[in-house]
Image (cartoon, rainbow, N blue to C red):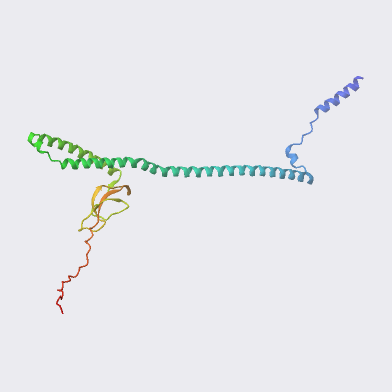
Length: 243
């Protein structure tokens, strides 16, 4: 190759390098391109299938959430019912546990009251009077009675705090719901079925029966039966005269 040809080729190469490169079409230019109907419908079908698939997935998720919410609601209702049942059962359990204790306290009160009654009705014997121990015995009995009375008042305070109230039965008609007739009395001045004496007190606990009262009930004596009066038939003298 001669020098002239070499120079010409070099000039052409320089000219090529000095030329501006062709611009690459940008995304904005792509938006202005025309789209044919086939491509448009193809894109719409693909979009429709994608939306349908996502809708199914969303529906499945909603169904699962709905099942979870229903389970939670059922569990919440069951838990609420169990709590209400347990809350309502607590007073009954407390009453069932406290009732035997109150009955024992009532029995203990009866014993204290009977002991006080015996102490108040006690009279020293002649032998004690002779030995001159009457004053010492009286002081001892007073101390014992005072202690019994203090214990009895304390028991009454405990029972009153638990709303335990004694029944009043004497002088009232027999109530089979709160009283039990243990003995019969015969007083003509009272009607039948009237309580003449309380043998053992009955008690109410918060308006409900705690213990039946044992009472003596009156039954008027029946009047003696009237026997029919027999007519006095006078003995007539027989006529024994001979004809």
